[in-house]
Image (cartoon, rainbow, N blue to C red; front, side, top):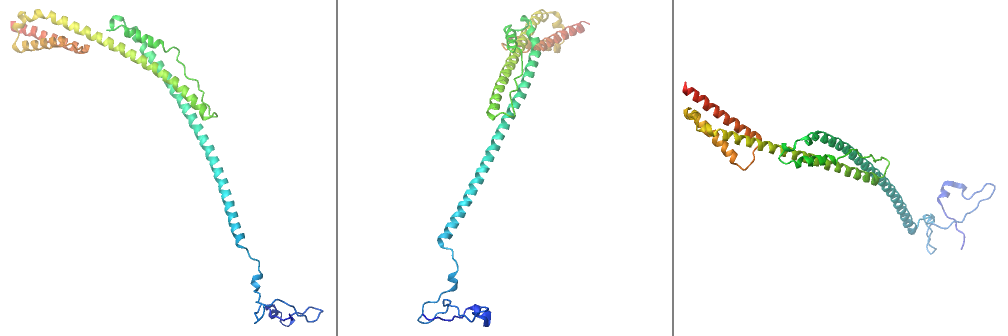
Length: 283
């Protein structure tokens, strides 16, 4: 193929110096044609000479970026999960230690309460056997107090540096001791209440007996001239007092000593009015 001279843009920039070299004659440079000529080989587009990124390379770069992002996310999530686990373990250990400390506080209060209970109920053990309806209640109270023995506080085995399981185990042991103290305290209080109830029943029986004896002594007054000589209102009050006393004594239900004592006072007041009215009638 014969040599051709092509008009490139650089020729327009260089003007008349196209193809010149200092110290050398005019030269003609041969470049591939960019201008299509009829019947010739298709012209070469200069832009086709620029380097291009293939579709495969683009896909690989996208996959590589996705893999890197995924790895970073996995590492970040793993770090966050590890930190959460550490915080969670620390929180559970602190909660177990706090619960153990609270168990110690409750135990100390239970020991103090039990000691006060023993002190306040000891006097009831000195109650005379004939002062209660059931003397066995006094013996039961003494036995309940004797079971207490030497009251001591639980050992403080809680540790802020220990694992949660260790403090939870200590908490359970301390709580068990506290429950035992509570059971002993309740047993003493129940036994003391039983003594008090037995004594109250004995007092009520004694008051009922005294009221019965009083009524029996007044039988002679009912047939005396004093009653017949008293005014009508006084005799009625006296009769009502006698009827109320009789009904109270005939009841199978044991009332309190205060009720029998009140009935006795009302009956005696009715008798006093009868005597006073009889004296007034004689004057």
